[in-house]
Image 1 (cartoon, one colour):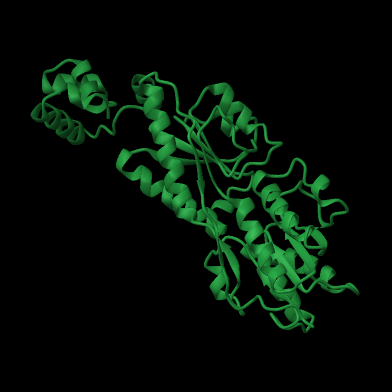
Image 2 (cartoon, rainbow, N blue to C red):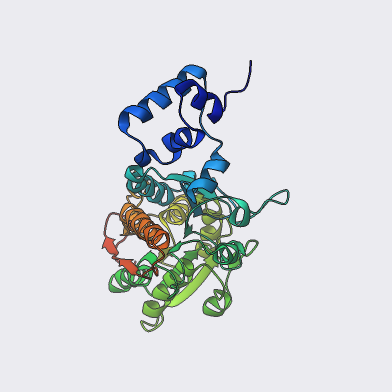
Length: 355
C-alpha cells in the first residue's frame, strides 16, 4: 500500500499541498468547511498527521513544556508534595493544549535531557545545585521558571516561605519547653549520612529548600540556648530516617524533640521512638514539614508545617505560560517572584518537654 502524504490528500481534495498543511498546522488560514473536508479525507485515507518534528519546525514550537527533576524521576510519583505540584501544573496547562515532559537532571547513553529534549520552556524543580542541567537550559535560551530554587533576578520564581515555616516549627518546641532538639534533614550530597559536626558549614551547597529550613530551625533554637544535634538523611525515606533517629535517641542526652525536614522523615522519627519504647509526645515530640496526607495517617497524627503544593504548581505553570507568551511576542520576560505562605498545624505528636 502506497504511503499517504500531504500531496496524496491534496490531489484527492483538489487543493494545494500548502492548503492541506494549513489544515493541520494553521487552521485559522482556512474556512471551517474546507478544513473539515481535508481532515475527513485524511482520515479516510489513513493519514495520521504531519511528522511531529516537522510540525514543530513549521510552528516554531514543540507544544510541550518540561519539568526538570532530580536524576530520580520516580520522585515525582512517590512524593506526595511532588505529585500535588505536578497535578496542579497539568491542570493549569490543560486549557493551553501544552503537554508535560519530565526531564531528569542526569543523562544516559550520550543523551542529556536538558540539552537534547525538545520543549518550549521548563519549570526547574527539585534540582541539585551541582547539576549542569540548568546551565544547559540557560544556554538554550528557553523560558524558565525556578521552583523552590535560589531566586535569580533573570527568571521568574515560585517558592514557599521555607525559612518562616521552619522558624514556626522550632518556636513551637521551644515554647513547649524543649531544650534538647534533634533535626533530621535531607538535601545534601549523596553519600552524606549521619551527624553533622558543623551544620551551617556542612549545609553549604545543599539544595535551597534544605538550607532555608535548616537555617530557620537553627535561628530559633540557638538563641534559645537549645542543645541541637543534626543528622543528614541520604535517602528520602522513613526507613533511613528511622535509623538516624535511633542514633539520636540512643545517646545519653537524647533529644526531647525532633524537627524534621519533611513529614516522611518525621514518620521515621515516630518509628524510631516506637522501637525504643518512647511515647510520643510524652517522652518525645516530633514535628514534620509539608502537611502531606501522611501527616494524618501516622499515629499519633503529626504536628507539621503546612505548605500548599497545589497552589505552588498553579503559580509556577501560570508564570511559565506568561513567559512563553512574552517570548513568542519577542517581549522581555517579567521576573516575578511568588512566595507562598506556610503555617503551623498542631496535632498530637507534640507536647510539653518531659520534666
